[in-house]
Length: 511
Ligand code: SF4
Image (cartoon, rainbow, N blue to C red; front, side, top):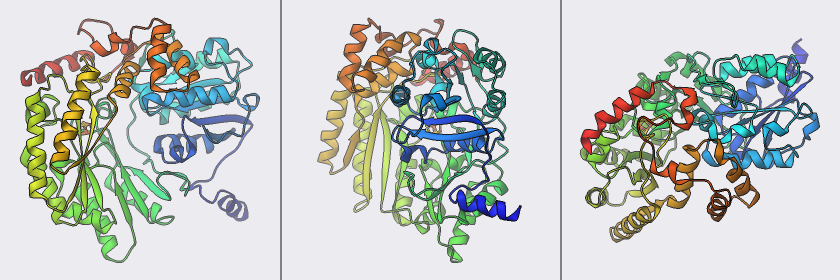
């Protein structure tokens, strides 16, 4: 027993768990390169669940790493985190010579399904590609699905059983309730790898969702209620990670919302001060909770730069989106970051939030000027995306501003910030347009997706595909009325549609 266990540790050196095995070839596909697959905590955790399930032979593939052919696969699962991930899904199916439409895949093809944030937010644009989809938190549903799959029943019998699980959506067959789990078993990087985008890093999920509920934010709204792991579980996970690496990253939409966040940071700070080498990674700081102690801990943990998100150009707009961040809180967070050892900050905001005027943009420039004057020698960089209205949020009905008008605002901001000596990066308004189309479409968009993939996935391919297949993309851009049915109404969302309407109406007073 002892020797067998040691053999496992040797054979699977970078796996922090003991794998199981079996006859059923279950393939977990990541629709991008392996470097990103290894850094995706949700995907890797589900792979670990499959890899530890008795009877299952779990295999990972990515767009750049596929040593398998379709005949060997019993089932194939995709994790989709970003709207444009469908291109990677089609690339993998194409390389495996598997038809894109589920209706064209008879019993001689594997069962193919998907889950992840994109599918949870709106599965409709992708439903023709999959036999079924998992809506909401994956870990429990995924285990139930694996247990059915490994019975090796016919495709139809398998789908009949899987279709009864809460949180599973089968194209044209059912509505589904978004699945929400209690956070009990803490999730952390199960395979530490130097091939990961976050090289040799042990990532720990600290919270799920965010209690702020900014009105555009799917990370908050699709993960309600806001949940967090117990302090002890987080500390135990940190200790586990430190046995394998000194790079620890804490993950969550807003980790400083954890009620014991200060104590977690104190624990890490004490360890570093008592001689333990820890490189600490935290993706973004909540602007109104930046404290000297927090910054000192990040600096001790080797962080030189960090990010704060102010989200909107003016205080009025920040109230409208429910961000409620005041100018003095922003200035204070920057001052604390500078005075306590960070070398610079990235400040993230959006352009094109409904009702945004030139006055809002000019208010932003006045703030940028103040930031520059008060923080000489501190490296400030602005990063802007354009507003993309998303399903399951109070802004799911909103109109998106025209691309030309957004580009004009970007040019103006870029020019004025340059005059102030501040560097700024802008997302592409044209790509953000298509992101809006993808995220608010229904299943009529399928031919467009396939055509764009076949034509290289470039921007120009979208416009010509929309024309060729006569797909009305304007509907997704112009938005919806409150009483209209929405493509993603097939999901019983939490909070309800009425709650989202009430929240929108509450915020309307800032228009
Ligand atoms: S604070 Fe950030 S993560 Fe939280 S709701 Fe707002 S945008 Fe989303």
